[in-house]
Image (cartoon, rainbow, N blue to C red; front, side, top):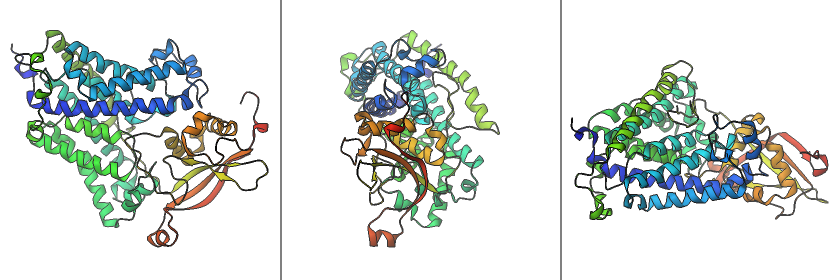
Amino acid sequence: MTWDWFWAPEYDPARFVFQRLLAATYALAFLNVLNQFVPLLGERGLTPAPRFLERVSFRRYPTLFHLHYSDRLLRVVGWCGLLLSLAAFLGATDLLPLWAAMAVWFALWALYLSIVNTGQLWYAFGWESLLLETGFLAIFLGPAHTTTPVLVIWLLCWLLFRVEFGAGLIKMRGDPAWRDLTALYYHHETQPMPGPLSRAFHRAPRPLHRTEVMANHVTQLIVPFALFLPQPVASAAALAMIVTQGWLLLSGNFAWLNLVTITLAFSAMDTTLLGWLPTQALTPATELPQDGSTPLWHRAAVLALTALMVVLGYWPVRNMLGSGQVMNRSFNTLHLGNTYGAFGSVTRTRHEVILEGLATGESEWREYGFRGKPGEVTRRPPQIAPYHLRLDWLMWFVAISPSYGRGWLERLLLALLRGDRGVLRLLRHDPFHGRPPRYVRARLFHYRFSTPRERRESGVWWVRTPVTELIPAVSLDDVAPNG
């Protein structure tokens, strides 16, 4: 028996692009850890990781932090992940032996798995599981001086299929606005974190909105099947997905969801579109085996990986085919063989939680400014993606239902009353410049994009009206000693 079927040299350029984009995504994720984890989940965070780890087992939440958690160790993990990511992005793994290159990609996956399994609700997003599953498959691709194993390419295409087809199914089965093509009448305005072009997308003619929805259905429900057709059809399907994901990246901020999906799409492209990339020239000739093949132990590992993913595929397939389809579900603690999907329901109106403080002796409440989520009506929504602002995203959920803030929203207000520097660094604007206010409160507002006339006359991006007081004014005197 020959192993010729095992190798796919025509996908070597795809591997090159895939690994660089994945490494860049890992770098963003670990930079996010360094910037946000401690104030959210640190020893004195809003939902402290040590308390969480005391209540759960390693079997249910495998993470190295079960051995020990400290904010210092967390930063060590974050910096190790960031440096390894940058090294992989610069191609250092291509200069390593096969086993060492695989060890680097395994370390990235294992470190980020430890973060996600400690991250509680702050890391309960579909793109976390997607990054982990993608990163796990990447371990077995091999460096540039080996030939790409075709089985891993197929598994990456299968993952891309589940991402797109699962998202398409949940839309068609969920909100009727997707079926009657009216979803984008609302989505650009009510999505979690609009971007700088979201208002323009929202103000586009309604026939264009219906066309966008129809194009989305085609891309997510029909095009994914073409990934398994011969080339160049598969490459054309992947290119269509890249264009669609780029469109989504322009219309809103969805962390690195679009970037990882684009990364997966490149793995489906052969030399038909990527043949111009000089991947082999990036590796010294002395490092290149005669035929680029790998040792038997690596081939056995790829075969075992394939068998594992076939078995794990039962759960997402059952979920997609079943009538009770759910979105973004991990069926195991390693976040492999997940189900994906987003926006099975479309919010019709936008509400925002606004945090305000009142200084001693003053009568005017001052508003705290967030980095990404809407607040000041004159501020244009910023471009955040492919970065992720976790506090801003959770505040969107609180505006939908205050129950999402149970256990941490009150601690956020307490941190503002105490002038917690870590929490304040998560915000864009502290109206008290580090000197804590006497009182803080949370108010709920209705937001909508301004009309062209309102924009011309007053320069506002948003028009807002108060709805209710979510949390009445509270001071440190009102907080219990164990608060």
